[in-house]
Image (cartoon, rainbow over all chains, first blue to last red):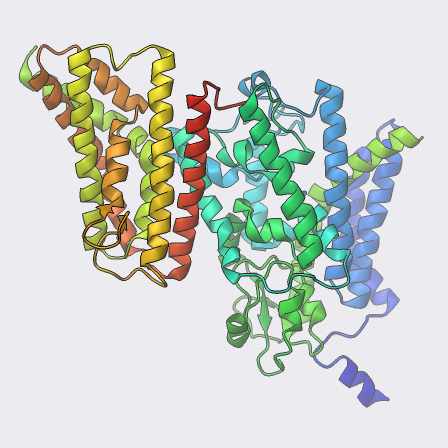
Length: 390
Length: 219
């Protein structure tokens, strides 16, 4: 009996007891409750309920991560909820403030465009060369609809990114959830053979958009290629060019966020387009956390490769015992590996020595960030729905 | 107007507006340079070719600007047509260039020559040269500023000299691009550079067609 148990969890952490899982969840529970305090203290009943539900949701998911030692499936619930509720909250706000999802050029000139993190890599060169921020938003708090200025957003992003690297794309990005949800729907992928060169397209988009942003003095990606404009804030079209811009947004959203994830079971927008993701990959070199493949245990069944939503594992990388730099640290490969060969790892330490400790350390940082960014958005989205229902 | 003073003015104007020139030409130069082979020598050859034809473009424009006087500040509709036409040409050439690189380089472009567009081999035209000429005659803001000044000069020789000195000063800002020769070229880098070229080309085509159709670029 004992032998059977050992075989079942060879190299993998067995499920924890309830009490131990609860104890490990305690820091995140306190943090989640702290984050929800602002909502709980508001007179708005919908916001109070939404805050309580969000805190409970985040705590429950983290508890399950601790109890089962599985990461990906629980994180996915959070991520999909974030991806779905963000547009609900955003569109509701835009409609209340402007009466339309379209942003007119006057609003952009007035610097009232809500800032998001996607154009961050596009701002660096113009800011360095000309001391100008090529984004039509406010650098100080009070600008945009979120109320937080660019300086606060960029500062927070940088601090977190230096620690978690591209983990940002799996725990804080409020765009990736829709495609991850879509990718989770089919049981099997219809398209299995994908050209591996397509993984390089985000780098090309990054290069082209950085150069065009510098030349045109505008965030070129936001103006021409962002698929999420289709579900957030499109161009208030006044001529054919505006219609073309909106057409590009809709086609890219439909193809990369809806159809291709259903066919491939991959996060296709993140893998084949997002320039911010490519930029974020660079910070995987600064992050202390990564995923390794323990070659002494690995029998190359390539289940990890199949499960990776961003094609960040190849035959070569598995042989080298590592992921590609595009790894988002979602934990899918670790959960999929039957032998426990795919492990969480802290740079500078030996591979597969106390990998669960590395996972815990990463998850505390990542989930605290998730509660701070995603928790607020989920609360607002839920409150928007509850206001309609109650 | 004193000669040295005029040359100094042209040089300072070029030096001051150099970053804007680099920013304006960056979407054309950087991906195409990365798509060529590696090494300082080849990159220097690319830049010589690009800057040489850019210089020809400058002089050509200076001659016309002086001859017509008002060409540099034509009515907005005409300016938009010129600008739109050059955008379309740039888009077409970049697409052709990206296609030619695909034909020439099956894996890494380790060849010693620059990529030609059109026929492969000695009969083709260097892509860098065509791009240099087109960026040389495009109406970017620093170029218009220099053109306005050149149009006020008393004779064509002075206008040409003004543009020549202006060109030399702006060229100094392009020298760091030789450093891209250090970037190791492999199939991945070539693919990224080619794809970036196609994206930039599509933007230029779209913007160019919109301008030719008399539409604002932003809806």
